[in-house]
Length: 403
Image (cartoon, rainbow, N blue to C red; front, side, top):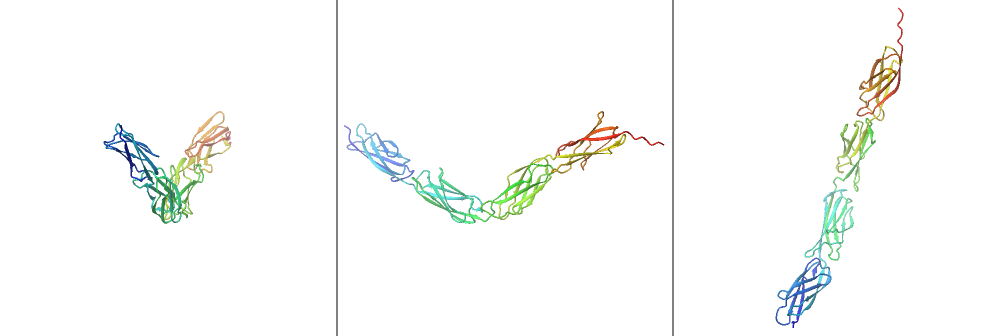
């Protein structure tokens, strides 16, 4: 017949803190001679069921992940061939783990109007373990401060970004609220805002876009301080323009704006940026890139001849004048194609436009009515144009005077 036993169960540490593992030990005492063998089953209320093997009359297991509160532990010796089963109980208390809260700011120091990120990190105090949840309340003293509550992330951190802090030292207090498993805690820091240059924003606009070759274009840069900074920036703005006719052009700020006007940009696309230099109170900044498109200018061609009418056998001077049509400007280059026909005979010529925009053709023509056209070819900056309905009258040769 199996001998009776008595099972005693203990827990250590007891109480334990949240996240701390607990060692459960069962001691099986025989009522009589011998040493019990076999296994012990530990049942933890609200926790795991674990099995340990007896060695020298004791069995131990480790329980982890126990939540805050009281857990009843029942240890049941399952008996063996010589010893009867028995049961023992105890209680394990798990309390909230202590925490520490640290708070930092970046950048520190910052300048007036510069965004600052405050980060609070909540860490369990050993032997507590795990990741606290809940909220952190940031209290920031001084101008632009206040009280702000932010949630803890899954990493145990909470962040707050501000760009409203005034110049000077600000005391920062971060208070962790605590949760079911972790106790509240507080961290402090000091953040300094220097009266250095405030951040600025530079915007860039074009007076006309797209424009045509030779048309004046005014670029305007406006520099404004980022809130909460106020005032009017001074200094200079450098306009950087790519492509033909571009370059770097530095202009003074006046009332927070700077302008640059040019009519020399070549046909095509030009990237334009405006770079503010900064001053003692305001930081440098650059605009977004603007694309200025310059299209071909429209040309206008006119024609005349001298004399008209002309007697047969005399030289006739044809003149084509090519000019830029507003808002385009400058003198077109290239050639003008003259075509003269009386229906039976066709004469063509293609003189070059000179530096003043004129193309000349001198011919003598047979008597009759001649249709004359003058077509400008266009160039890299000007489109083509022409005159197609011009009439030249050539009369019969004059009879020579009698002797």
